[in-house]
Length: 254
Image 1 (cartoon, one colour):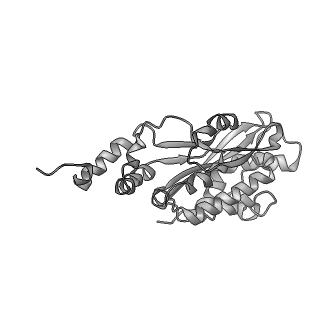
Image 2: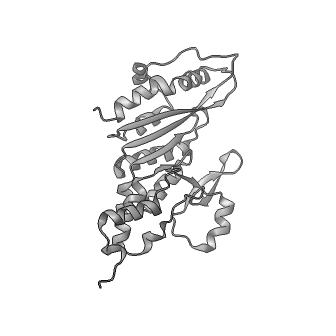
Image 3: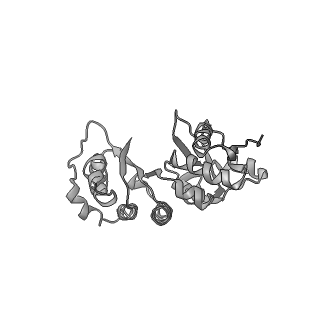
């Protein structure tokens, strides 16, 4: 009697086994974050096979510290099967990476190291990614550089079908309401404003089937300047005119 192994099973049965081991049906979002530098230092001796990078940290984000990325919660999956052999890795990695959304939150600095550490097979299987843009008044030059690099990397190396774009917005409270809601057509002009270059950069990610634009609203002081008034008005328009503007640029028309 011939010996039965995983690779002698029919492909559809192997696929079902991979799905049972590698797909968390209760939570298909894998949250990747930058590891706290103190934890990174504690785990340095483990010699993990992860790219390290530097982030701005400390008070006022004024010093550069080495760290890496990590998964922030137990994923409920069993990825050790990927290490059995190359054929199983090719078959199973597609199931793992195509079945989940990879959420980086505000930690966009972890995007490029994470994807560069994947094999080409695994990287090509990723179809859904979430990233968050920081609040406009508080963006620093290194934030702009990271955002530009991440958008360029995604547009050139991934073939996404879905992008979740979160944007930190500001709301000053009931005593001060937005004066204007910007319509889709206004953003052709608004994206030329200083500090809005990030919009054109993210718009280089083309060929999406779905673009989810979500405002993450935080309290901000009542505007005392034109730039803060613009920020509040823009924040109120994120899920409306701004979302419509981006979808026209980034989503494939059916």
